[in-house]
Image 1 (cartoon, one colour):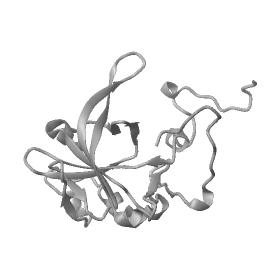
Image 2 (cartoon, rainbow, N blue to C red):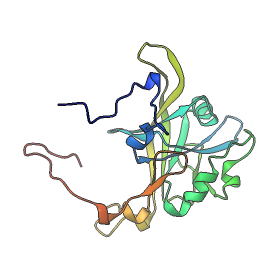
Image 3 (cartoon, rainbow, N blue to C red):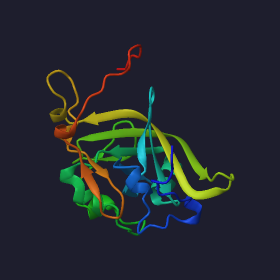
Length: 214
């Protein structure tokens, strides 16, 4: 296939465009809205746009941090964190929790959010969020480049040991209603966010011979 119709660049040499397209291409992305606490009991709450689920049995989620930030330090120290679903009604509060504050300041208070104690971890959930995952740290990995040199990026992985879901999001058939939750997703650039809608949904059947996992 001809490559004449493709823009080509090598990231190490720069992209040559007005804005780095990477985060726009790999997006929109779910938001890792992570609450944590240090050993002194100081809370932290911060959103991470490099976040996803990496295993379902057991459930393992993770986020990547550029630099050794408070979330990474707290989780490495205590071995616990909570993921909170970011929704359209909570978009401004989520964005406010990304403010760069001194370590002694509480992002819950700054963003006007209510802490609710976890049941299996000593970390507060965002009470206003309709879904919370209580997690135990499984791995904290400093990333390396292709040459094996360490870089200042950290991947934090945790097993989900407890789940809170608002009853309003589970229908009479016991099915979670994702669109009712109004999740928001991170786009490229400094300001872009997206919502998803059932109007844009389409369904595909797996090829014959494969069985989806429940």
